[in-house]
Length: 244
Image (cartoon, rainbow, N blue to C red):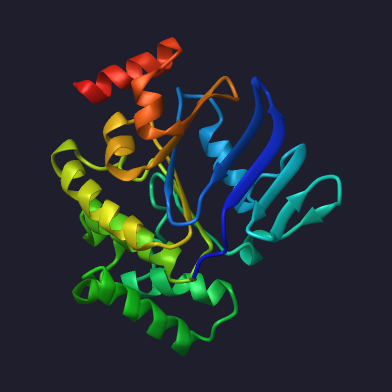
């Protein structure tokens, strides 16, 4: 299903970071969020997911308000219908692949049998059924990434958040997994936000891009428009890497 566009307006101060962001991710499209280290990219995702509380602002999916500091609305993480894939995937080492994926529906109230059935369906979609009884340490990097993505999607989220989803992979397999990830994201009908510092990820996965610098949006638009007219040194370096 699709819950509609994701609209984020928030401010947050944490140590040296002052995040002041306004962005929209459209349903059925992939928005890349790029920026140098410390720009606030991961913190932004955590605010959308409900893991981190902003100082002020709103997070809205379609007509559902997840966060509104003025109206004192705060939907808990488990009720937000947001799927998230972390940079290191955060799979449970003591659980099998099947039970890692089943953890998603279990955490939202599904019984064990129903959760495992739904997990099995997603393992089939990701061609992972033959690995159902393996532990994460018995998987390749690409396989772990697919398990993490299946776990995020099994709950039928309205929004999908991916934090540097390819950064943990070896260079020699990254291109192959990037193509596979792109196919799965193309099938997702909700809004997707991908945090990355890799120009190749932006080109291959995203339709739109936001560049964060020092906690603020320096560029926002389609990938072609932003890469065609970068206006800051960081954006120009990012474009140069894309050309390379």
